[in-house]
Length: 122
Length: 229
Image (tube, rainbow over all chains, first blue to last red; front, side, top):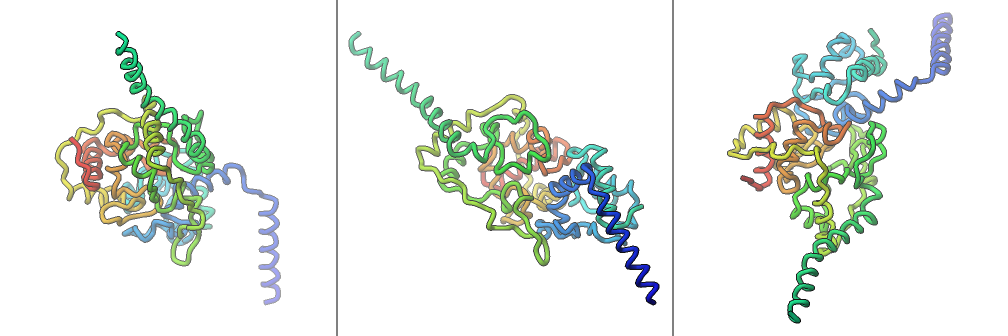
């Protein structure tokens, strides 16, 4: 038991140390701002589908912090949902297409960012 | 001949009056509006630039607004965007969903009637080429039922915008009376390609066909009781 908690503690410390020496890259900061500009209106500051528009939505936006729900989606499906909208992946029309706003590089970065939000990297 | 000189001067003064009003309006715009609104086209716009905005750009106001609405609104401004502008600077985490931080929303400047008219004249003169597609809205009969279905269900405009009966989202501009506020060609052009008018704006480009653009524009105009053509 003692061994286990020591091991766990060690992992936590190692993770903390690792994050301390791995500052968010410029690309990460930028994509967070992209999220904060476009996605936050529905997916929310908590990234869990509780944006300011939630009371007006007939379908709850995807919870990006949900490792199970997000983990079941392959990267290419997330990319498609962002680029061509919810309907293109058999989801709600309330998720609009952002392909006219974001380029493919930004959408790819967003997919990677969402993997860090859900902690469900593929 | 002696009487024609004062008459000539009178005509000259009459011709000068609108120009003076416009100049006065331009002065007011510069002194009271330019701290928050861009009055000339920015050299370039990035997403980061949107975060420095305090209010919508006005450099194409003459192609955007209806003058009568401007004159009335400038005297008695009401909130057009429930979450202010830009919305993302005014939302905070709430227990059930993000909420509008009312403390960040400041009232708009009120103008006296003469100043409102002068400013409206100055704004209406701001018509740069190539922003709005002139004549894009064709007019004609409007199927309000289809328009409502498009706004609410098929295109989901209601997610971000308030439409009929003031129902809808908070991050976009209220569209219940958009037809009073906005010119039909601006509405249609913005629906067609918001990025062309306002690069990086948080309104998605929905790749709508012309039929849907016409229908939605007509619906919004009629919704405000502003039937045109």
